[in-house]
Image (cartoon, rainbow, N blue to C red):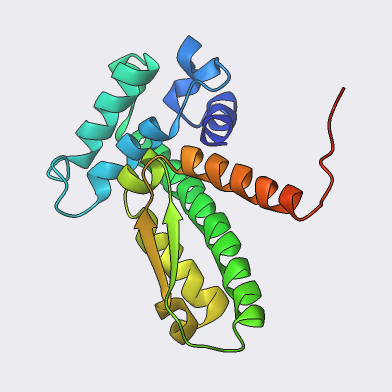
Length: 185
């Protein structure tokens, strides 16, 4: 999504003097690691926060192959802001899934005020600037402050493998109780 917004701004002659690069034009050519690098310099106390525009310019020129002469200060600010907006959108979507699970869990726990732990996996959760804080802010908006305080976010290592194992275990348990398995032949 970030790549598409940046390309739209390039096509509109708003960014990079209207010039694009092969890397920016490539599908999936801009990943979350690059988005993180665009945002990180604007995070207080980050190593690059002493000169955030220079840090963003370096990311744009080295990762996307843009000529330094094409990248103005306003382009750096715009690229970082686009990345922030799209990243915040992702955090809010993650918060919606967590909030829905909290609400569903409340129905089965008869209002017990337990802490609810959510294990999130991936480098996005681990390294993306302010990811957890943005998720928490959205949870407060959706659930209210009291319910949001009950949510604990933990980093789950190898979440895909654990999730696959849990699915296999649930399928085996259902099968042992007589549930039929749908097979594709």
